[in-house]
Image (cartoon, rainbow, N blue to C red; front, side, top):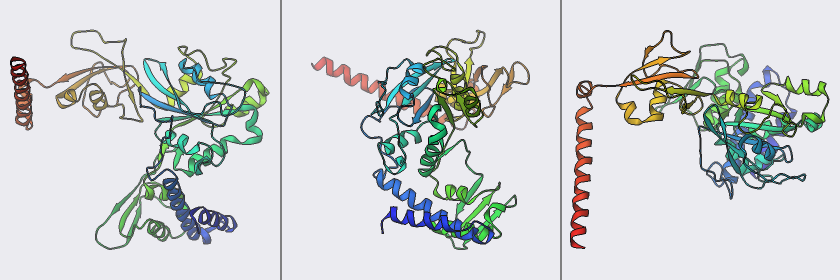
Length: 420
């Protein structure tokens, strides 16, 4: 029996099993088996690498953040790319106009956001239908996902539910955070020891039994499991697999000029949603204009502008350093690492002006969290402070070795010129 047949068999058994406290243990085991088989199927179809980009999909990461446009064919993704980035992507009245990944750069509030226009996907994309496998692989590597939907077709086709299900199948969790659960494997025996700081009502009357059976499905037979929040079976499976991607997702209902105002109001009230029309320029303006969609994308990407200044000089308000909550964080440490690793190594303290500071300026350490449009001055260690550091001797030796190597190379080049 193949993997697909096993998946269908488990899904059928889950469908005919009543959901109550008595069957909670059995359903938990079935969910664990189903997640394992789906993971095996996805790895098998992607050549064992977790998702091959495929021809035309290999785009170098660029900018401060990356957003993937996901949606069914002919919902307006290519036109939207032009409105956001001024990048031309072929658009037409027929479906599957875009066949490869078309990148563009959106410039907003001093940041550069890479936007990827991907081919339209269809139901069954998680199992390789159409070019779904390649599209989903790109989505896994994006910082956020912008799901584009046709407002006129959403009422009948329920495309939002289908896309959520396809992404959920391959381990992409939309607008969720990783559960606060830690699994510490032990080399010695002792079985599974489960402890929780809160009551676990969603795991049934015997949580430890459910946890033990689920972990055994993934060949984890000796471990300590600590849950600091109430979790479901699905969340425990995600932690056990360890390959889930948690992505912020914004839903854009395009073409609202084709539906009634009552329907627009209903769609706008959906969670994580925004309505608009690319053709009519409703909530979506020109590439360099400030509009509602760009504001929402900025919010979901968690971007923060930081202005730097030198001692005795005004801050540089033209070229901010853009930090991201999704990538490296928005602390002083992230700022130093973004500018220079040497600055991080020689860091002494930072002076901060802005919303994150209690007073102006506030002297802060590396763990201080910065807010949008803060002004920061980094103060590095003095020579005497560096000499007192335990790593100073090693750094001095590294510098000496580099200098000696450079002099030796220069000497060889000079000898070569004299011989030639």
